Image (cartoon, rainbow, N blue to C red; front, side, top):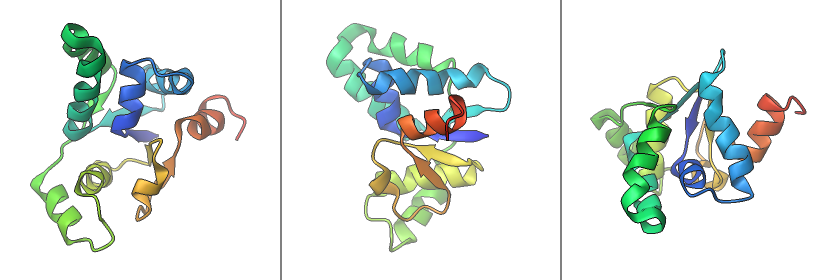
Length: 140
């Protein structure tokens, strides 16, 4: 299963934001498990860095590099931008670019804490706790 992590999931991990960190850190760790590929986009990494920098100042870049050691980066291409701009259902360009990055990279789902941002999605969109319960803890 190829999963795309939205910026807010990355921020949760970098800033150890509880209670989400309990789920988001374990989702990132799926990168080491057979059957899972965990990815994000350059846009999400930049957003996560911005918020980590506010909290961690000089260590934000190091924290992001540690996270990057686990999480793959898929392209945010010109095609992603064009599709987001042309889709009348997409009102937030950043979400549209992330979505089309996930689609073009053949992701199975997007994990975000702002599921409503991806109301136009044709692939599964789940919160971290729901994803964890269904695919990691096996309770779904």
